[in-house]
Image (cartoon, rainbow, N blue to C red; front, side, top):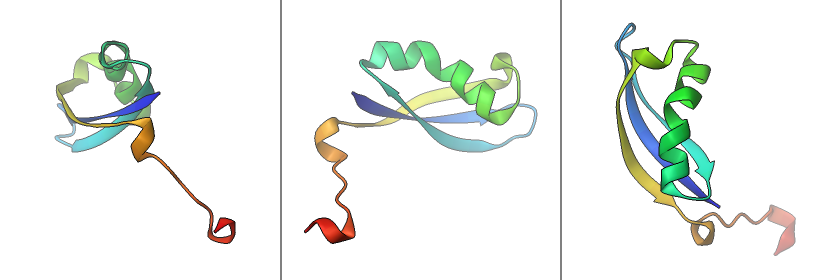
Length: 70
């Protein structure tokens, strides 16, 4: 599963930010991102504008190792 990082703009507040969503495909992420952003911003989906895909983080790039594991 990849993470898809999007930039967006909230019309009512003027805020610009980024948000990532895990998904099995970009099409799946594209379909869910507006609702996910509206949920975390406590606003309506229509208030979320200017959504653009900034980056895709593949499973290969998301390797984490704890301090004591090496």
